[in-house]
Image 1 (cartoon, rainbow, N blue to C red):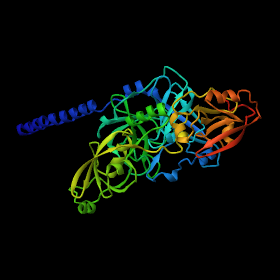
Image 2 (spheres, rainbow, N blue to C red):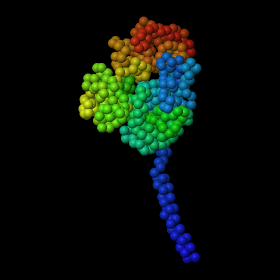
Image 3 (cartoon, one colour):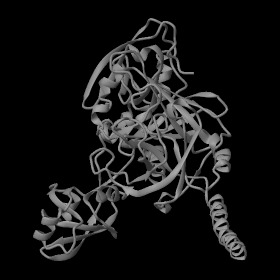
Amino acid sequence: MTMISRSAALSRWMLVPVIALFVGAAQVSAVELPDFSPLVEKYGPAVVNVQATGNPDNDAQQGGPGQQDVPEIFRRFFGPQMPTPRGHGTRVSMGSGFIISADGYVLTNNHVVDGADNVTVRLSDRRELDAKVIGTDAEYDIALLKVNASDLPVVAVGDSKAVKAGQWVVAIGSPFGFDHSVTAGIVSAVGRQFGGIDQQYVPFIQTDVPINRGNSGGPLFNLNGQVVGINSQIFSNTGGFMGVSFAIPIDIAMSAVEQIKTSGHVSRGMIGVQIQNVDREQAKALGLPRIGGALVNKVTPGSAADKAGVQLGDVILSFAGHDIAMSADLPPLVGSTKPGSKADLSIWRDGKTLTIPVTVAELPVEKDALANARGGAAPNAGAGNPLGIVVDDLTADQRKQLGITDNQGVVVQRIAGNLSRRTALMPGDVILMVGRKPVKSAADFNGMLKDAKPGDSIMLLVRRDEQTQFLAVTVPKDKAGKEQ
């Protein structure tokens, strides 16, 4: 009995630390697992739902991106209604966004509003406001919107450069149209490159946060309640969440916002080289001590790299002090460099490392930049006109692009109401004349149309790319197109 009692006592004694260990583990877990509710309560009201509608025929005319243009495993995500196939009624897409200033500036993804005729923002208090697209950038997949409101709740903007793999992050958005849904996870990797033409300038934040259709354009928060990214894409061959999602760093997004506000488009650096990865055999042939860098397989004549002395077969090891582990590392670094800046290239050539200074040039702005930068720098489009054509003054950069030397022309920002379904006019077109009278400003344009009556036909001289032609438009009989 004594031995049995001692054994029982020993067993009980041994169980004490084991039980304590499990209790301690549970307590540690309870302490370490974050409570996201204060973050959601404080910043959730600054997250909005974004709905964009448009005419599929306009998308076709504008050459809008289709799903066939996106690699199978990468899918940008809309809401419960995917864009309607071309020629089948109104296209509707839904996403998320967040308010970055109390006077109504909202940030979302370009692909949420791309090709839209009308954009509506729904706030957390259920108010629905018409949004004006101030400007967009397809490469960064950024769109800046503006709603007519004040004293709005705003997010706190963080530093995406401080984001590290393993940190907790939180997403708030409208997956499948369920507003203000909260999901959480950790950062899987930073500086992730897809390596293709699509968004080659974005060093994505990769996470395992559950992201689905409708989260697109929504904020990614750190535990301090600061936005560090914009949820943009998922890795999936089914269209649903599979544990890998990608966010655009907020530093890049805010840089784009400032440029859109000031110049109407985003400027990027360019040095003029075509590059590829270096594999083991190539590294051996080149005498490289390690696999890595960007192998130059083309130098554009007259480019910044050409002027600096970069040659075919050079391997770029670093740019402005940043190591290049693979070729996809170079475009974001060069693209985010201000044109005109000087940077040092570390080059491997003939068994030696050379340092070559280069003056970064500007990446040419695409001809559809005016359509992307709807409204340019000055959000001063007139309150409206009977046609429902919303226009803005041309910026100096836009005039330079178009080769317009005189003070003439306004850029079409969007076409509201019924006219959008009946006209060949498109956002990004430049209106030079109304009838035979030159248009000098947005206010001038609206003034010329103020006396137009329903059913009247009006001749507009329109510039699109390198071509100029007259278009006849008819004032909608119900005036439904008039801007409110």
